[in-house]
Every structure is written in structure tokens, then in C-alpha cells.
Amino acid sequence: HFLFHWFQPARRRCSISVTSVVGHVFGLDFEGGAERRGDIASIFDAKTKKVVEETSERLGVVQHLQRAAKGCGWLCLWLDGDREGENICFEVLKVLKQFPPERVWRAKFSAVTEREVRAAMSRLGKPSQAE
Image (cartoon, rainbow, N blue to C red):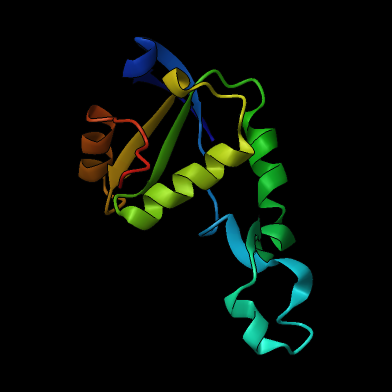
């Protein structure tokens, strides 16, 4: 979807493109496949690695985000206003590395109502790894 709206960080009206993810983009997996070998005890010492979640992989979420972000100058992340939403922000940022921190903003909301969306747009902040 494209619409024109005043975007305060840019200090002008912008063409805004809206898309979404389906929960977490990344999950954790064990390195070395210990859990698949049936060596359950070894998973307590196994290292983990971030991998694209199965649903995100199947739906092509990473590629979709990269295509949707082409040509965009700013990124405003609209995810739930909780720790999990904040974590997903950083998962999206891991995929969209082309945006410098000064071009990345965060909207926090808890309901998709006109009132909540307007309020979130009026109080944009920065993603925070401390949350």
C-alpha cells in the first residue's frame, strides 16, 4: 500500500509503503545438529545460531522485506509495544542493513485503531535493545 502522509523524522510528506512480518523472522537452532543425532545431553553445551524461522522461510519474508525496502529512504517499524515487538524490530533491521540508525524509527501501539495509530505516529521513538 502506498499513501502520502507527513512523516516527522523526514520533516515532510512522504510516500509510505506498508508491509508486515508473520511473527519472528529469526529463531535459534543448535550448531552441529546435536538434537537431530539424538544426543540430547549434548544440547546443553551446544552453541546456538540464529536461523530464519520456518514460517518466514516458507513465505519468503526476508526476500519480501528486501524487495519492499528498495528505494525507501526511511524505515519506521510498527510492532507491538512490548519486548517481543522490540526484538522483532532488530530482526527486521538485521535483514535491512541499508538503513543507518538515524533513518530508523519505531512506532509502538497495542491496537489497530485510528486513535492508537495516530498516537503512535505522533510519538515515534528509536528501537531500543535495552527493552
